[in-house]
Amino acid sequence: MPFSYCVRATLPDASALEEWIDWMKTEHLCEVLAAGALRGAVVRLDGDPPRAEARYEFADRKGYETYLHLHAPRLRARGLERFPWERGVSYERSCGEIVVILEGRTAT
Image (cartoon, rainbow, N blue to C red; front, side, top):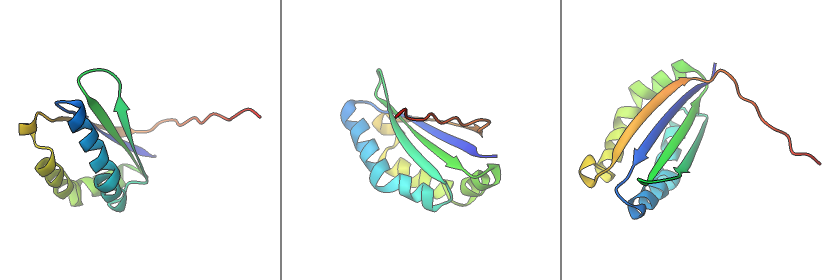
């Protein structure tokens, strides 16, 4: 069953948010994909404080757990070097099995 892993980042200001999103687009997202994720997306969340969420999909829980044990510690450390808590950045993680995916169709 597909498995979802999300990381929500809260940043101190709009400039830091754009820096975080740029880093995700140019570096981190590709690294997580190379480490086993099938798909990744970054969503700029509405409202204040400035927040964004990285959403990853793994083939299954085992693929996620492999990522978590073999790759996540190194990638998280690199992320914290660039966006440490001391800069006013906070992170929240969530994960779980994807139980249904529906896709709409475009009418012609």
